Image 1 (cartoon, protein in one colour):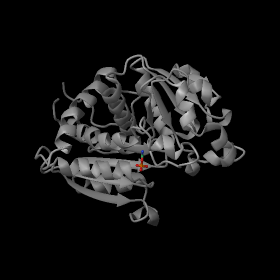
Image 2: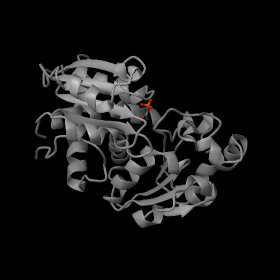
Image 3: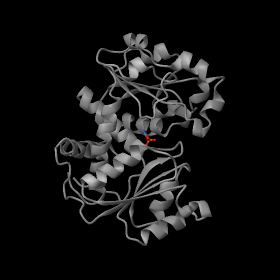
Image 4: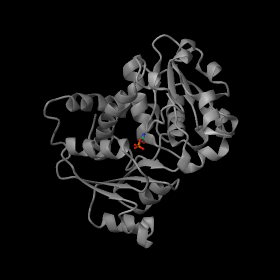
Length: 307
Ligand code: CP
């Protein structure tokens, strides 16, 4: 099976089969990443630009490592060092970058829909590395890869996503992807961090942390999205931490073998305690490792590879 689209903009529009194609392809790339020599010639001669207009550690570095492990050439630009600061529009920047004949542009932007604007305007493949509070598809795909690896499958698993759901692109992309596998998703947080449309997506809503965690196979903790106004919708961060920080004692409520996830960056002591983040149920660093394999698979498939 080959990839049917020019771009990867979100998980909402992907089928279960297309998600499984990426996860299956990523398995062999994970094996390559664990070799002594972590490089294959698969994308030699291809050029990949990462254009990040918002800060990033994991997404940007793992796309660049993924591209380099496939022997592609990579170039990075950032919002603060590009000519965007001189008033150039996103579309003009995209058209100018495209004149240099890149094959893929990975973009992160604070404006929801920014990757979609480039995807319409350019012939290059566009990958959404996170657009405002809208979608972060590669994060959700690496999350599903990690869940499948740790739990042996996806269908029917019970998941709690806890935190600032309203401002989280990670939550949205995960919900869209998880519901394709009939996963039982419960979102938990203060009422002001729970958007009104969630139940229409087939998601349960629970405001009490203890109740949300009962019988769960997977717990995904999210940070407060300060950059999108998350702090302004709660009385105080201290109160939030008292009510929603995941501590060791909460894990008794969950199923045996529960896994604890976090997309990063973590705000330790606010949404998650040190003991849980660094404890035996945490798969947070596995998520980061798997991000490279999943992004290698996405680059490979978008550039014409077949699983
Ligand atoms: N999970 C995630 O997107 O992390 P970065 O912001 O560091 O890329």
